[in-house]
Image (cartoon, rainbow, N blue to C red; front, side, top):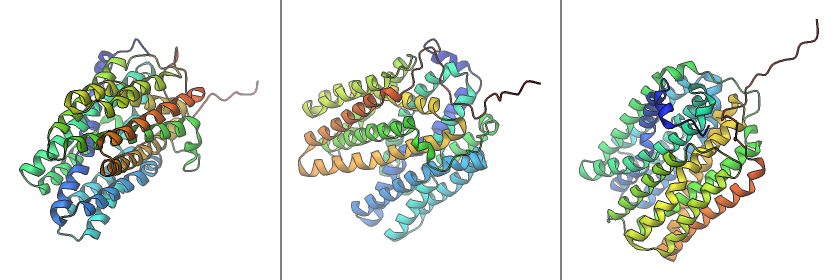
Length: 404
């Protein structure tokens, strides 16, 4: 696996095409939260109502993740993706165009969350069928690295549209990208070619796999840490200071660089914990390095380990479950991360209000430390991929026949 580079991935048939399609389809993920915040606050004059609307969106996404992953095994990837695209885009467009009371906005946001297209679960289920298993580890790392573009470009685009044009246009552009990118992804040959076998296990049983449970917990803590640090950066500079956006963009670029640099390394049982040590060390300096240059330095260190850690988490899930269970497994890990976003942002928000940015950054660092401890505790159940290839467990195996 260590010898399989990103150049090999670029030459693999269809890989760059499906990566571009799924990034476009997932791009609204980086736009919707801020877009809804601007739009609802502008319509109602209340950040409290806007927060409730965002919570409804996140709750819907968290509830739907495992269920839509399971549905892809029953109905097929393409029907589930197309149906959810139409419903989610319609809900977002309705929020943008209709003059609704707060209760109506909350209901539509919940519908948008419940029907948010399961692109992430779908594409990570497709990857093992798209490239040889020796290239799968670097592909997961590349995927985790490039998703940083969503969190760099999405907030910038939606802020420009919301402040320079209108919040209605910002949400409509998000809806159009959802439809366009989702249609591109759904039309991809690989999406039509891959059929997820129907799982024979009850819904939720895959979460009992120690690796899936561990990655759900670690992902929850890592993303909670990221959300806390992001909120802390915004609080440290103030909502009207663009410096916070620059710092967060540099953080994402450092994560992107880390993914490209470390993505080809062989994955050992301790590799995830080692990557998270880098994340934690950088996060631990954030309370003590105020100002643009200090925070930038700390977050460059932290970011360098972030995408490699997220890529390895995807690889661990892929290697530890049957192919028929991968979409549901990724649904659970995505749900853990969504809950992490809500908890981390809420924790940092309370800390900012009560104690200031230094304590808020400390919360982010503490969550990163807990993620590292959890990953280290999970070393005995983490796969050792030295000399092995990444890939799901086959749903079928040779059946011994009695002698004739």
